[in-house]
Amino acid sequence: MRQFLKLLFRNQLAAFGAVVLGFILVLALLVPVLPLQDPDVTATGDRFLRPFSEGHLLGTDHLGRDLLSRLLWGTRLSLAVGIAAAVIAATIGSAIGIIAGYFGGRTDNLIMRGVDMLMAFPYILLALAIVAALGPGLMNALIAVAAVNIPFFARNIRGVTVSLAGREFIDAARLAGMGHVRIILTEILPNVLPIIVIAMSTTVGWMILETAGLSFLGLGSQPPQADLGSMLGEARDAMITAPHTSIVPGVMIFLIVMSVNLLGDGVRDALDPRLKSGALSRPQAKTLVERKGAVPPATDDLLSIQDLETQFHVGKRVYRAVNKVSLSVKPGECLGVIGESGSGKSVTALSVMGLVASPPGVIAGGAVRLEGEDLLDVSYEKLRQKRGEKVAYIFQDPLATLHPLYRVGDQLAEAIQCHHKVSDAKARERALELLKAVRIPNAESRLKNYPHEMSGGMRQRVGIAMAMANDPDVIIADEPTTALDVTVQAQILALLDDLRRERGLAIIFITHDFGVVAQLCDRVAVMYAGRIVEQGPTNAVLDAPAHPYTKRLIACVPELGGGRRELAAIPGLPPVVDKLPEGCAFAPRCQKAREECQKGEIGLEGAAPRKVRCLYPEEAV
Ligand code: ADP
Ligand code: MG
Image (cartoon, rainbow, N blue to C red; front, side, top):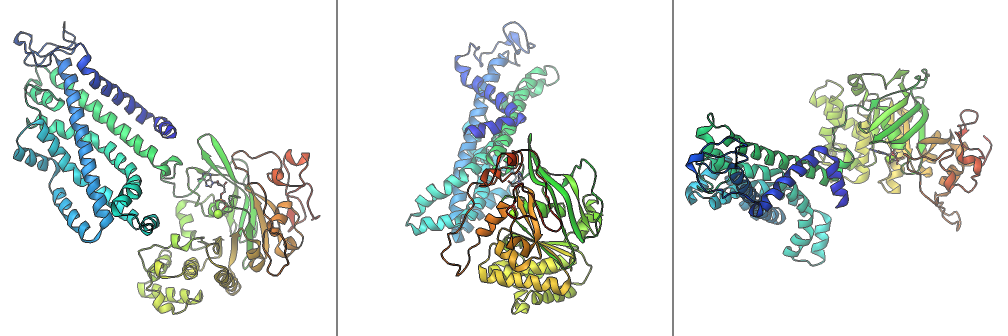
């Protein structure tokens, strides 16, 4: 709760709305005890007194009634009716939505068609029709406004409930023997409540306006009772001669609706966890590049990452996720990048094609060169042409990368047609070829499958086929086998190995498993806390790891039939990259660390291709 309030008040507009609304609410609550004149006493001698006249701070209306008193009583009434209408609409609407969404099928159909019928009428027309049927009066206006807003809540909440009703925790509740009512109350309701609150906070302003609208037309509050709408309605005739009679209630309506909406927006933002980290603020098309310092000169590698620095700027904090990382691959070569979770592997990979979300991502230094060309310097349009065409990605979870609603054949064809103007038939032919290339059995019929109809290994093959679609020069595979079981993993690795040998592909293979590196990679770079701590040919590193971190990582790989060796784990956790310690980032977890290890900058030393960033390496390099 405290965090919610803190977030809410960080948003200055919402804070402003809260203050204004709070003030108005307190005023409205205090009305009965304030020393106000009777709002309904007429004094024909004092008609249309200007504001600041004696005894009438805001002047009087066409019957000589005190405007201040009428305004405050009117505000009280309008707020009460508007909020009551919102609560009624939210309660009934959400109940309808939850029931329809939870039970589904015929119940859903029947209820929602009824709701649709209500929705088919224009808003205010429906309200007018209801009041016309019930007769004018404030209570009837309230009923009308609540009724026309029920469909809005019912539709919204039904949508959320439908997606909840199929989830595993609901199944679990059913398996535990809970009844429908209990499931709805304890499992569904807590999940939709925030959404109901959000929908209410953003619509209550509307409902106050609608009630005021009905009163303005004479269908809501009846004379002499004042609400903001009826005050405006009565002032209509004197708009030119005594403008203050309409300005006073007008300003109040404006203040209420504005503050409610500002606060409502703030509540919505503060309740949505995704908004907190700025994840929903639309990222730019490519990562922001703000390089300080000189750009490293070109090399003759196919792809080279040079002194890359990628950071996340969140508020005042700077997370150095990638800190002067240099990697390169030649055609047909496979480079392994290994490290614990959070060591910056994915961010390095995504930086290559400008795919790190900005904000908060910023590339603060270095270069990424593809065939000598600096990718950090090219326009978005040029970069987009190279994405998938020159450098392709394979990600960990193929279920998340494949579109759930399209057949895999169509998705493959789309990947091809994105870069090449070919006919649908040609694209399908090529898609079939690709599926065969990644050794999917019955490729022909698999083209027509949806992703959910395939197994994990099959889906990852499709993911690889998509990466291969445009014959890229480099494939960056970010933990492509982590979600698969070991036998399928072995098949996928063999497949990647064949592809690179047949087609001269360069592969950057990201993993946290040294076993995988040993099977596939020619060279390996070990990352820790955003830096490379050791690199070299795979065999050399495996045989004689120089950095204590590498040694411990290798010790984490279990060996079949390797005797009853105790399985090692590295104690402690990687550091948070916004407060990196001085010296070696691994020192706090290292048994060999001495005082010097925690001081100054420790360089990546050694004769190429073998290098290590350690003052007391396990092996000389
Ligand atoms: P991994 O090596 O497991 O792929 P990542 O490259 O995904 O690790 O992450 C590297 C570091 O960057 C982590 O410490 C992570 O917390 C940080 N990071 C990633 N995305 C963001 C973000 N949007 N805001 C702040 N920090 C981030
Ligand atoms: Mg990762």
